[in-house]
Image (cartoon, rainbow, N blue to C red; front, side, top):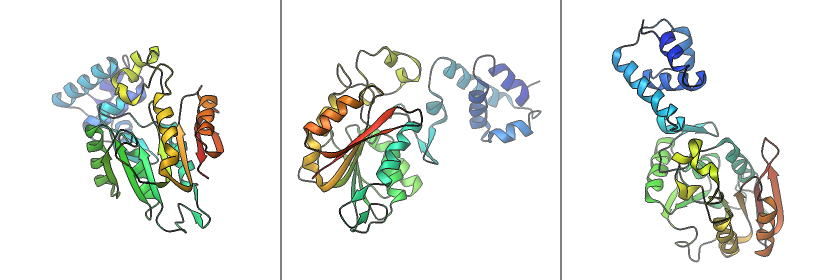
Amino acid sequence: MNTVRAALAAAGKRLPASEARLLLGHVVDRPAVWLIAHDDEVLDEAVLLRFASLVARRKGGEPVAYLLGYREFYGREFAVSPDVLIPRPETELLVDLALAQKVGAGGTVKGAATGAARILDLGTGSGCIAITLALEIPSAQVSAVDASEAALDVTRRNAERLGASLRLLRSDWFDSLTGECFDLIVANPPYIAESDSHLDAGDLRHEPRRALASGPDGLDAIRRIVAAAPRHLTPGGRIWLEHGYDQADAVHELLAAAGLCEIEQHRDVAGIVRVSGGRRL
């Protein structure tokens, strides 16, 4: 019989049960709890065919987030497509640090005691970082840039759906921001070495390579961002960068070489140093 229970059981032979439930819930537009409570519900042929197609695509390696069309980040759903990197839980640390950021002598970004803080998100992708900051700090002036117009379209749609006010600008890092300075700069740039075999395995092979890989050691983008950051930070302004699990020492050296002070490095929930930052004097 073509019931919810039977469909999930068949899919469970090919996929983890949690993924099968997500995909079927997406097809029937119902949460997982509904599937459990209505496991004897009979599904029509069109639903079964669509579900089977998604199961086959997932089995072939396509990321669940692309199949669903969204990924949760900081408690909100963000639309995603193959034009943008899939938001990851570890990047929430970058947002946590940004929300705690002090700006000048008057107070914090969140409290906006010194007026509307200017925040820049470099390489915004889906816009998950910039939009989250704009919603969490309504008084801030948030700018989001990306070199990809397709990525900016995704950010624009997410901002409109979630009600976030952003300035969007196509730019290769700081190239279109001549003369502009910000109180806070955040970035989750590409930081995987171009020869890393992981780029051709699992979900990564379906994500945009330009958002993942950066030079022989993965640090090309970070070098460029850090070197230019002091010219785009207000006095006392800070930059936070996400980076690879084994790049903490190299990023610390780059921040110091750029003349940034009060360099801090923070660990994610797995205990790995994943975010580093420094302040302009």
